[in-house]
Length: 132
Image (cartoon, rainbow, N blue to C red; front, side, top):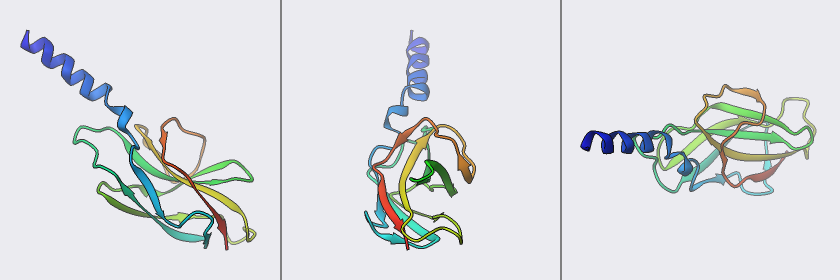
C-alpha cells in the first residue's frame, strides 16, 4: 500500500508539477518602452525558487515584432532569485526604433541560442523596448 502511494506521489511530482513553471518571473531591466543597444544585459527576478525536482528551464526570448521572429538569448537563466543574461537586439544593420518584446519562457525543452520557432511553455509578462 505504501509503495503504491509513494509511486503515485512520485509520478505526480515528476509529471504534474510543471504548472508552476514561470510563475513570478519578471524583467526588471530594461524598463517598458526603454531604448536598448544591440547587445544589452537584461535583468530580472523570480518570485520563488523552483523545487529541487523541477524540470522547468527558463530562457530569455527577444521577439522582433516586425518580423514576428523569436530569438533565444545566450544561455539558459541560472537558478536563483535574481538573474541576468546578455541579449541581442538585432544586428549592426538594425534600424533605430525597431520594436522588440522581451519575455522569459519557461519550458521543459532544451533550447539553443539563436532563431527559434514559437515554443510551448509559460511566458512571463513581456516588456516592449525599442532599438536605440
